[in-house]
Image (tube, rainbow over all chains, first blue to last red; front, side, top):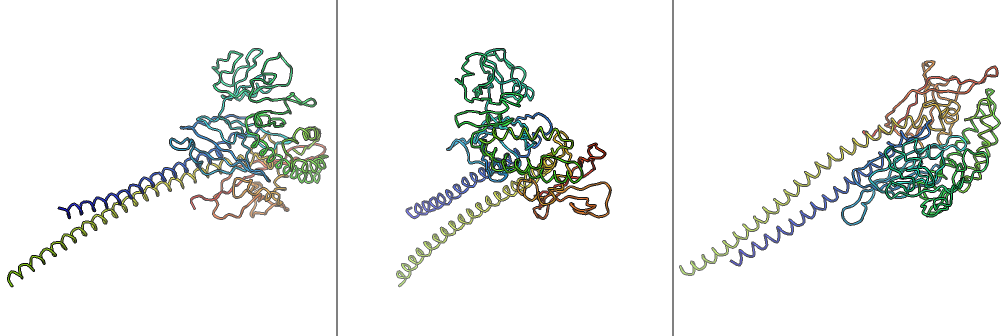
Amino acid sequence: MKKVKAQFNFAWIFAIVVGGAILFLAIFGAMKAGDTYRYQSDTEIAKSLSVITDPLQSGFSEGSFGKISFGQETRINNICFEGGFGKNDISVSTRSEIGEEWNLPGGATSIHNKYFFSSEKSSGLDYYVFSKSFNFPYEISDLIFLTSDNYCFLNAPDEVADEIIGMNIENIEIEHPTGVPLGVGFPGSTSDGANCTLANSVKVCFGSGPQLDNSPYQTGQDCDVMVYGSCSSGCDSVYDEGTVSKSGGDMKYVGNLMYAAIFSDKLIYDCNVKRLMYRAGRIAEEFFAKADLMDARGCNTNLGSDLAVWSGLTGNATSDDLIGLRSMADNMESKNDRELCGVW
Amino acid sequence: MVRKNFVFSGWEFGVRSLELKQRRGQMKIMQMAFMIVAVFFFFVLVGLFFLSIQFKDIKGGAAQLQKEQAISSLKVIADMPELSYDSSEAITLDEDKLKVMAGGFGNLYEEFWPVASVAVYKLWPVADELKQCPGVGCNYYELYDNGQSNVKTYSTYVSICKKVKESGFVYDRCEVGKLVVGVKNAGG
């Protein structure tokens, strides 16, 4: 009886130990396989983001808008690397049901030829992507803005309001708290003219220009982001250059970089501006060589020396240099417009 | 003697029966071990089967994404300010910029190109042999090549234009060309 009990016990102990080991291996393998599958899926999404933003390059249009929807809450990580042409490393992670709030991100996709302006980490189910071209003074690249938050533009100038409404950007609302609402970027909105209707919206206040009253939106109270226009000569709007002020710090901008400063973190903004300036310098070098070729066949240009200087100035420029460089850019643009052939 | 023999036989029987039971026990353990190993290998094989299916999917997905990227990069490259003739005209290349890029400037861009190679061919007049630009009577520009082997090429027709001044007038002289980009063959 004792022997039988001993045999029974041994068999059970053996089965439990080995069975437990197999079960552990099976669960471990399943978890690893799940992780691998998730990593694969997140990596594919990051790569897809690079591909699906290709048609968003605005080309000769004013800009373009697109919406990306995910099946589950997703975080997009944007890491910017400067130095030469630099790059944006885009990676994606999904919300975790156990342990940490977010799973480890999938493989990052390095994008060298695009400029993604976003928060370093943004999360949500729906992402809104729109692009605007950046000319300084010639076309340098399209700027791609990636956001998941809602925005409310308060006291935005007509040019900005028209652009946003024209592109039908769903997550940006235009409000004039002191007057009649300009409407929102999509039909069917019920704006009451005083409050932003989009949920949890980031309030972006335009603080310069004609003062309509002493509303808190013009003095900077109740605003998450303030835009101060400072253009005084040779500009279509006072907001052609200025400063965007938010919790992360102040960002100097010219032209469409205003949107970049509004929608991105200071770190991403400064890094991408450096990348853009480096590219501007390279294009100036190319234009300098092109000017020689044009001269050789009688299409003379006087921009050669300007381009050489411009290339040197922009090569290492930062966002703080933008406003200082703008007058020279305007000068080069008017020179180019006056020429018969024109370098660009 | 008989009794002794009987006692001895009983003891011998006891030892033998114990040995037999031990052998049976060992056999059972061996059977169980073999079974467990067999079950383990079965699950390993099932896992490998699923993994192979999954990896096939990954390869397919990567190839599809690469193809999509190559096709969309044709327009992206043609519209790059470093190559485009006029930002208001799509898929039109500037011949002067092509000459500058083909003269070694394109290699400065290296990783910036989203593809492995970029070349532009003039399609008219039809030439018997390819002559690389810049040069007299040349008909193709090699803008960039990272030297990768086993590349798959994708192409699109483009206009190649330059501004020409004749008798005090400036006009755009355009030719038909083909932009060819190479991407690493994911299948290979």
